[in-house]
Image (tube, rainbow over all chains, first blue to last red; front, top):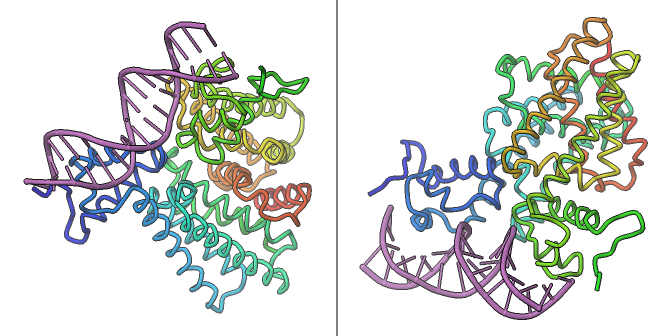
Length: 196
Length: 196
DNA sequence: CCTACCGATCGGTAGG
DNA sequence: CCTACCGATCGGTAGG
Protein backbone atom coordinates (compact mmCIF):
# COMPACT_ATOMS: atom_id res chain seq x y z
CA UNK A 1 0.00 0.00 0.00
CA UNK A 2 1.41 3.35 -1.03
CA UNK A 3 1.20 5.48 2.07
CA UNK A 4 3.61 8.23 1.15
CA UNK A 5 1.45 11.00 -0.16
CA UNK A 6 2.40 12.46 -3.48
CA UNK A 7 0.28 14.96 -5.32
CA UNK A 8 -0.10 15.04 -9.05
CA UNK A 9 3.10 16.94 -9.58
CA UNK A 10 5.32 15.41 -6.92
CA UNK A 11 6.99 12.05 -6.95
CA UNK A 12 7.34 10.11 -3.73
CA UNK A 13 11.00 11.00 -3.65
CA UNK A 14 10.05 14.66 -3.69
CA UNK A 15 7.67 14.11 -0.81
CA UNK A 16 10.51 12.52 1.16
CA UNK A 17 12.84 15.40 0.29
CA UNK A 18 10.31 17.95 1.47
CA UNK A 19 9.85 16.29 4.85
CA UNK A 20 13.59 15.75 5.15
CA UNK A 21 14.26 19.45 4.65
CA UNK A 22 11.85 20.31 7.44
CA UNK A 23 13.32 17.69 9.76
CA UNK A 24 16.96 18.57 9.01
CA UNK A 25 16.18 22.22 9.65
CA UNK A 26 14.33 21.62 12.90
CA UNK A 27 16.65 19.11 14.53
CA UNK A 28 19.84 19.43 12.52
CA UNK A 29 21.07 16.77 10.10
CA UNK A 30 22.91 14.63 12.63
CA UNK A 31 20.19 14.66 15.27
CA UNK A 32 17.46 13.88 12.75
CA UNK A 33 16.92 10.17 12.42
CA UNK A 34 15.58 8.22 9.48
CA UNK A 35 13.04 6.69 11.86
CA UNK A 36 11.62 10.13 12.64
CA UNK A 37 11.51 10.92 8.96
CA UNK A 38 9.67 7.66 8.30
CA UNK A 39 7.12 8.41 11.02
CA UNK A 40 6.53 11.87 9.55
CA UNK A 41 5.76 10.19 6.24
CA UNK A 42 3.63 7.46 7.75
CA UNK A 43 5.84 4.49 6.88
CA UNK A 44 8.43 2.25 8.54
CA UNK A 45 12.07 3.33 8.31
CA UNK A 46 13.26 0.60 5.92
CA UNK A 47 10.55 1.56 3.44
CA UNK A 48 12.24 4.88 2.83
CA UNK A 49 15.04 3.10 1.05
CA UNK A 50 12.73 2.21 -1.78
CA UNK A 51 12.75 5.87 -2.76
CA UNK A 52 16.14 7.10 -1.69
CA UNK A 53 19.63 5.72 -1.46
CA UNK A 54 20.79 7.05 1.86
CA UNK A 55 20.44 9.79 4.42
CA UNK A 56 23.42 11.65 3.01
CA UNK A 57 21.84 11.53 -0.46
CA UNK A 58 18.87 13.48 0.88
CA UNK A 59 21.18 16.18 2.19
CA UNK A 60 23.05 16.22 -1.10
CA UNK A 61 19.88 16.65 -3.14
CA UNK A 62 18.63 19.54 -1.04
CA UNK A 63 21.92 21.42 -0.94
CA UNK A 64 22.79 21.18 -4.60
CA UNK A 65 19.30 21.92 -5.81
CA UNK A 66 19.31 25.21 -3.92
CA UNK A 67 22.89 26.04 -4.86
CA UNK A 68 22.01 25.53 -8.50
CA UNK A 69 19.05 27.89 -8.33
CA UNK A 70 21.16 30.66 -6.85
CA UNK A 71 23.76 30.14 -9.52
CA UNK A 72 21.24 30.25 -12.34
CA UNK A 73 20.01 33.58 -11.01
CA UNK A 74 23.54 34.91 -10.61
CA UNK A 75 24.38 34.14 -14.24
CA UNK A 76 21.21 35.85 -15.40
CA UNK A 77 22.09 38.96 -13.41
CA UNK A 78 25.69 38.97 -14.61
CA UNK A 79 24.52 38.90 -18.20
CA UNK A 80 22.06 41.75 -17.81
CA UNK A 81 22.79 45.34 -18.82
CA UNK A 82 21.72 46.79 -15.47
CA UNK A 83 23.85 49.13 -13.39
CA UNK A 84 25.97 47.57 -10.66
CA UNK A 85 23.62 48.77 -7.94
CA UNK A 86 20.65 47.35 -9.81
CA UNK A 87 22.45 44.04 -10.15
CA UNK A 88 23.18 43.90 -6.44
CA UNK A 89 19.60 44.84 -5.66
CA UNK A 90 18.35 42.11 -7.92
CA UNK A 91 20.51 39.53 -6.16
CA UNK A 92 19.45 40.70 -2.70
CA UNK A 93 15.79 40.46 -3.69
CA UNK A 94 16.29 36.99 -5.10
CA UNK A 95 17.89 35.85 -1.84
CA UNK A 96 15.10 37.29 0.27
CA UNK A 97 12.32 35.92 -1.92
CA UNK A 98 13.83 32.47 -2.20
CA UNK A 99 14.52 32.29 1.52
CA UNK A 100 10.98 33.29 2.42
CA UNK A 101 9.35 30.93 -0.06
CA UNK A 102 11.67 27.92 0.32
CA UNK A 103 12.46 28.27 3.97
CA UNK A 104 13.41 24.72 4.92
CA UNK A 105 15.54 23.91 1.92
CA UNK A 106 17.44 27.20 2.02
CA UNK A 107 18.11 26.75 5.71
CA UNK A 108 19.50 23.26 5.16
CA UNK A 109 21.64 24.38 2.23
CA UNK A 110 23.07 27.20 4.33
CA UNK A 111 23.58 25.48 7.66
CA UNK A 112 23.70 21.71 7.25
CA UNK A 113 25.91 21.39 4.20
CA UNK A 114 28.92 20.86 6.43
CA UNK A 115 27.62 17.33 7.00
CA UNK A 116 28.06 16.47 3.31
CA UNK A 117 30.56 13.70 2.66
CA UNK A 118 33.56 14.20 0.44
CA UNK A 119 33.89 14.94 -2.42
CA UNK A 120 30.57 16.76 -2.13
CA UNK A 121 31.59 18.80 0.86
CA UNK A 122 34.49 20.32 -1.07
CA UNK A 123 32.37 20.71 -4.17
CA UNK A 124 29.75 22.65 -2.25
CA UNK A 125 32.38 24.78 -0.53
CA UNK A 126 33.82 25.66 -3.91
CA UNK A 127 30.34 26.57 -5.09
CA UNK A 128 29.99 29.01 -2.22
CA UNK A 129 33.41 30.52 -2.68
CA UNK A 130 32.84 30.96 -6.38
CA UNK A 131 29.48 32.62 -5.75
CA UNK A 132 31.03 34.96 -3.22
CA UNK A 133 33.91 35.78 -5.56
CA UNK A 134 31.60 36.72 -8.39
CA UNK A 135 29.60 39.00 -6.10
CA UNK A 136 32.87 40.66 -5.10
CA UNK A 137 33.58 41.29 -8.79
CA UNK A 138 30.16 42.91 -9.18
CA UNK A 139 30.94 45.18 -6.23
CA UNK A 140 34.41 46.01 -7.54
CA UNK A 141 32.95 46.95 -10.90
CA UNK A 142 30.46 49.23 -9.14
CA UNK A 143 33.25 50.94 -7.24
CA UNK A 144 35.23 51.50 -10.44
CA UNK A 145 32.16 52.97 -12.12
CA UNK A 146 31.72 55.24 -9.10
CA UNK A 147 28.30 53.81 -8.27
CA UNK A 148 29.31 52.14 -5.04
CA UNK A 149 31.18 53.41 -2.00
CA UNK A 150 34.77 52.35 -1.66
CA UNK A 151 34.44 49.94 1.24
CA UNK A 152 36.31 46.66 1.14
CA UNK A 153 34.37 44.57 -1.44
CA UNK A 154 34.76 41.40 0.58
CA UNK A 155 33.25 43.04 3.65
CA UNK A 156 30.37 44.43 1.61
CA UNK A 157 29.55 41.03 0.17
CA UNK A 158 29.87 39.41 3.59
CA UNK A 159 27.50 41.97 5.11
CA UNK A 160 24.90 41.54 2.39
CA UNK A 161 24.98 37.75 2.28
CA UNK A 162 24.94 37.46 6.05
CA UNK A 163 22.00 39.82 6.38
CA UNK A 164 19.84 37.93 3.91
CA UNK A 165 20.86 34.59 5.36
CA UNK A 166 19.64 35.76 8.74
CA UNK A 167 16.08 35.63 7.48
CA UNK A 168 16.10 31.90 8.09
CA UNK A 169 16.38 32.46 11.79
CA UNK A 170 13.96 35.25 12.39
CA UNK A 171 11.24 34.57 9.90
CA UNK A 172 7.91 34.04 11.57
CA UNK A 173 8.70 35.86 14.80
CA UNK A 174 6.69 38.84 13.74
CA UNK A 175 3.46 38.40 11.94
CA UNK A 176 3.06 42.16 11.72
CA UNK A 177 5.78 42.58 9.13
CA UNK A 178 4.61 41.85 5.60
CA UNK A 179 7.09 39.98 3.37
CA UNK A 180 7.05 42.82 0.87
CA UNK A 181 7.75 45.39 3.60
CA UNK A 182 10.55 43.27 4.98
CA UNK A 183 12.09 42.88 1.55
CA UNK A 184 11.92 46.57 0.68
CA UNK A 185 13.26 47.78 4.02
CA UNK A 186 16.14 45.33 4.05
CA UNK A 187 17.04 46.21 0.46
CA UNK A 188 16.88 49.88 1.39
CA UNK A 189 19.12 49.41 4.43
CA UNK A 190 21.72 47.35 2.57
CA UNK A 191 21.79 49.51 -0.55
CA UNK A 192 21.70 52.91 1.16
CA UNK A 193 24.72 51.79 3.10
CA UNK A 194 26.86 51.44 -0.01
CA UNK A 195 25.32 53.68 -2.69
CA UNK A 196 27.41 56.70 -3.56
CA UNK B 1 48.33 11.43 36.06
CA UNK B 2 46.74 14.74 35.12
CA UNK B 3 46.86 14.81 31.35
CA UNK B 4 44.36 17.56 30.64
CA UNK B 5 46.43 20.65 30.14
CA UNK B 6 45.43 23.65 32.14
CA UNK B 7 47.46 26.81 32.31
CA UNK B 8 47.84 28.89 35.43
CA UNK B 9 44.59 30.72 34.87
CA UNK B 10 42.42 27.93 33.53
CA UNK B 11 40.86 25.09 35.41
CA UNK B 12 40.58 21.70 33.77
CA UNK B 13 36.90 22.30 33.28
CA UNK B 14 37.70 25.42 31.31
CA UNK B 15 40.13 23.47 29.16
CA UNK B 16 37.35 20.99 28.40
CA UNK B 17 34.93 23.80 27.59
CA UNK B 18 37.38 25.38 25.19
CA UNK B 19 37.92 22.17 23.26
CA UNK B 20 34.20 21.43 23.34
CA UNK B 21 33.42 24.79 21.76
CA UNK B 22 35.83 24.06 18.93
CA UNK B 23 34.45 20.57 18.41
CA UNK B 24 30.78 21.62 18.59
CA UNK B 25 31.47 24.36 16.08
CA UNK B 26 33.36 22.13 13.66
CA UNK B 27 31.11 19.07 13.66
CA UNK B 28 27.91 20.35 15.21
CA UNK B 29 26.73 19.39 18.70
CA UNK B 30 24.97 16.16 17.74
CA UNK B 31 27.70 14.83 15.49
CA UNK B 32 30.44 15.65 18.01
CA UNK B 33 31.09 12.72 20.31
CA UNK B 34 32.46 12.72 23.81
CA UNK B 35 35.04 10.20 22.63
CA UNK B 36 36.38 12.69 20.09
CA UNK B 37 36.45 15.37 22.73
CA UNK B 38 38.37 13.05 25.03
CA UNK B 39 40.91 12.26 22.31
CA UNK B 40 41.40 15.97 21.66
CA UNK B 41 42.20 16.40 25.35
CA UNK B 42 44.41 13.33 25.52
CA UNK B 43 42.30 11.26 27.90
CA UNK B 44 39.77 8.43 27.77
CA UNK B 45 36.11 9.33 27.43
CA UNK B 46 34.97 8.32 30.93
CA UNK B 47 37.64 10.54 32.45
CA UNK B 48 35.85 13.62 31.18
CA UNK B 49 33.10 13.00 33.68
CA UNK B 50 35.43 13.86 36.53
CA UNK B 51 35.28 17.46 35.35
CA UNK B 52 31.88 17.82 33.82
CA UNK B 53 28.42 16.45 34.42
CA UNK B 54 27.23 15.73 30.93
CA UNK B 55 27.51 16.65 27.27
CA UNK B 56 24.48 18.89 27.47
CA UNK B 57 26.01 20.72 30.42
CA UNK B 58 28.95 21.71 28.21
CA UNK B 59 26.58 23.19 25.66
CA UNK B 60 24.68 24.96 28.41
CA UNK B 61 27.82 26.52 29.87
CA UNK B 62 29.01 27.84 26.53
CA UNK B 63 25.66 29.25 25.44
CA UNK B 64 24.77 31.03 28.66
CA UNK B 65 28.23 32.42 29.23
CA UNK B 66 28.14 34.15 25.86
CA UNK B 67 24.53 35.26 26.25
CA UNK B 68 25.40 36.83 29.57
CA UNK B 69 28.29 38.79 28.12
CA UNK B 70 26.12 40.24 25.40
CA UNK B 71 23.52 41.19 27.96
CA UNK B 72 25.99 42.89 30.24
CA UNK B 73 27.16 44.99 27.31
CA UNK B 74 23.59 45.80 26.28
CA UNK B 75 22.74 47.09 29.74
CA UNK B 76 25.86 49.24 29.76
CA UNK B 77 24.90 50.75 26.41
CA UNK B 78 21.30 51.30 27.45
CA UNK B 79 22.43 53.22 30.49
CA UNK B 80 24.82 55.48 28.59
CA UNK B 81 23.98 59.01 27.47
CA UNK B 82 25.06 58.45 23.88
CA UNK B 83 22.87 59.23 20.89
CA UNK B 84 20.80 56.39 19.46
CA UNK B 85 23.14 55.99 16.52
CA UNK B 86 26.15 55.88 18.82
CA UNK B 87 24.43 53.22 20.92
CA UNK B 88 23.74 51.08 17.88
CA UNK B 89 27.29 51.56 16.70
CA UNK B 90 28.59 50.51 20.07
CA UNK B 91 26.54 47.34 19.99
CA UNK B 92 27.58 46.47 16.45
CA UNK B 93 31.24 46.92 17.37
CA UNK B 94 30.83 44.74 20.45
CA UNK B 95 29.29 41.98 18.34
CA UNK B 96 32.05 42.12 15.77
CA UNK B 97 34.85 42.24 18.33
CA UNK B 98 33.42 39.45 20.45
CA UNK B 99 32.76 37.27 17.42
CA UNK B 100 36.28 37.72 16.10
CA UNK B 101 37.97 37.12 19.44
CA UNK B 102 35.74 34.32 20.77
CA UNK B 103 34.98 32.61 17.53
CA UNK B 104 34.12 29.10 18.66
CA UNK B 105 31.99 29.99 21.64
CA UNK B 106 30.01 32.65 19.78
CA UNK B 107 29.38 30.24 16.94
CA UNK B 108 28.09 27.57 19.31
CA UNK B 109 25.88 30.05 21.18
CA UNK B 110 24.39 31.23 17.91
CA UNK B 111 23.96 27.97 16.05
CA UNK B 112 23.94 25.02 18.43
CA UNK B 113 21.71 26.34 21.20
CA UNK B 114 18.76 24.60 19.61
CA UNK B 115 20.15 21.38 21.05
CA UNK B 116 19.71 22.64 24.61
CA UNK B 117 17.26 20.61 26.69
CA UNK B 118 14.24 22.15 28.34
CA UNK B 119 13.86 24.30 30.32
CA UNK B 120 17.13 25.77 29.07
CA UNK B 121 16.08 25.80 25.45
CA UNK B 122 13.14 28.06 26.27
CA UNK B 123 15.21 30.14 28.64
CA UNK B 124 17.79 30.79 25.95
CA UNK B 125 15.12 31.57 23.38
CA UNK B 126 13.63 34.12 25.76
CA UNK B 127 17.07 35.62 26.22
CA UNK B 128 17.38 36.11 22.50
CA UNK B 129 13.92 37.55 22.09
CA UNK B 130 14.44 39.94 24.95
CA UNK B 131 17.76 41.09 23.49
CA UNK B 132 16.15 41.63 20.11
CA UNK B 133 13.23 43.49 21.65
CA UNK B 134 15.49 45.89 23.48
CA UNK B 135 17.43 46.63 20.32
CA UNK B 136 14.15 47.38 18.62
CA UNK B 137 13.38 49.89 21.36
CA UNK B 138 16.75 51.56 20.77
CA UNK B 139 15.94 51.83 17.07
CA UNK B 140 12.44 53.15 17.76
CA UNK B 141 13.85 55.81 20.05
CA UNK B 142 16.29 56.83 17.33
CA UNK B 143 13.46 57.15 14.83
CA UNK B 144 11.45 59.30 17.23
CA UNK B 145 14.45 61.53 17.79
CA UNK B 146 14.85 61.81 14.02
CA UNK B 147 18.32 60.26 14.10
CA UNK B 148 17.39 57.07 12.30
CA UNK B 149 15.49 56.44 9.06
CA UNK B 150 11.95 55.27 9.39
CA UNK B 151 12.36 51.69 8.25
CA UNK B 152 10.60 48.95 10.14
CA UNK B 153 12.58 48.64 13.42
CA UNK B 154 12.28 44.88 13.45
CA UNK B 155 13.77 44.61 9.96
CA UNK B 156 16.60 46.97 10.89
CA UNK B 157 17.50 44.91 13.95
CA UNK B 158 17.25 41.71 11.95
CA UNK B 159 19.56 43.07 9.27
CA UNK B 160 22.15 44.26 11.77
CA UNK B 161 22.18 41.14 13.92
CA UNK B 162 22.25 38.86 10.91
CA UNK B 163 25.11 40.74 9.32
CA UNK B 164 27.32 40.55 12.40
CA UNK B 165 26.41 36.93 13.02
CA UNK B 166 27.60 36.12 9.52
CA UNK B 167 31.16 36.79 10.62
CA UNK B 168 31.26 33.32 12.13
CA UNK B 169 31.01 31.76 8.71
CA UNK B 170 33.34 33.88 6.70
CA UNK B 171 36.06 34.71 9.13
CA UNK B 172 39.41 33.48 7.96
CA UNK B 173 38.60 33.23 4.29
CA UNK B 174 40.52 36.35 3.54
CA UNK B 175 43.74 37.06 5.25
CA UNK B 176 44.02 40.33 3.39
CA UNK B 177 41.28 42.01 5.40
CA UNK B 178 42.45 43.34 8.73
CA UNK B 179 40.01 42.91 11.65
CA UNK B 180 39.94 46.65 12.20
CA UNK B 181 39.20 47.32 8.54
CA UNK B 182 36.46 44.71 8.52
CA UNK B 183 34.91 46.21 11.65
CA UNK B 184 34.98 49.77 10.36
CA UNK B 185 33.64 48.93 6.92
CA UNK B 186 30.82 46.78 8.25
CA UNK B 187 29.86 49.45 10.78
CA UNK B 188 29.92 52.03 8.02
CA UNK B 189 27.73 49.92 5.74
CA UNK B 190 25.17 49.13 8.43
CA UNK B 191 25.00 52.65 9.90
CA UNK B 192 25.02 54.56 6.61
CA UNK B 193 22.04 52.49 5.60
CA UNK B 194 19.89 53.82 8.43
CA UNK B 195 21.34 57.20 9.45
CA UNK B 196 19.15 60.13 8.59
C1' DC C 1 5.82 -1.50 1.87
C1' DC C 2 6.67 -4.65 6.12
C1' DT C 3 9.15 -7.69 9.89
C1' DA C 4 13.27 -9.03 11.63
C1' DC C 5 17.63 -7.90 12.43
C1' DC C 6 22.81 -6.43 12.25
C1' DG C 7 27.13 -4.03 13.32
C1' DA C 8 28.55 0.38 14.90
C1' DT C 9 28.47 3.99 17.89
C1' DC C 10 26.51 6.77 21.26
C1' DG C 11 26.39 9.04 26.36
C1' DG C 12 27.27 7.58 30.53
C1' DT C 13 28.20 4.36 34.96
C1' DA C 14 30.68 1.07 38.12
C1' DG C 15 34.49 0.29 40.40
C1' DG C 16 38.89 0.97 41.28
C1' DC D 1 42.44 8.99 35.37
C1' DC D 2 41.71 4.02 33.57
C1' DT D 3 39.34 -0.67 32.13
C1' DA D 4 35.26 -2.85 31.43
C1' DC D 5 30.88 -2.46 30.18
C1' DC D 6 25.66 -1.25 29.56
C1' DG D 7 21.28 0.06 27.41
C1' DA D 8 19.74 2.85 23.69
C1' DT D 9 19.72 4.26 19.20
C1' DC D 10 21.64 4.81 14.85
C1' DG D 11 21.76 3.92 9.34
C1' DG D 12 20.98 0.42 6.64
C1' DT D 13 20.18 -4.72 4.70
C1' DA D 14 17.82 -9.28 3.85
C1' DG D 15 14.07 -11.32 2.40
C1' DG D 16 9.62 -11.36 1.33
